Length: 132
Image (cartoon, rainbow, N blue to C red; front, side):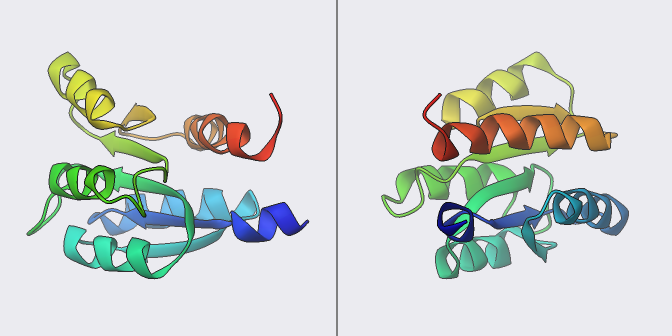
């Protein structure tokens, strides 16, 4: 239980309300506390302020986009180990490779299914919570 308390906050950074609410609902049902924002600048502030176990990050955001957020997180020693799952409508291989090369742990294509979110989150969080 103590382990879970340290690792239970997930931040969803997504400007599309329906997608953000859907991802948040799936994560809440999985037992996470979910923080939400619709822009990259606020997302960086929230991830710096909270001890997030994981960030779900859209690439296309108003203002500071997901590429900027991912870059800043991986440059920051306090945030670089926070797993980031990128989710986007862009199914292009170059974008996927770029995101993974920059440090994202997974790359999901919209539209998202609950199963895809659950599976990706389980893979991203499990190594931190088990000896496997």
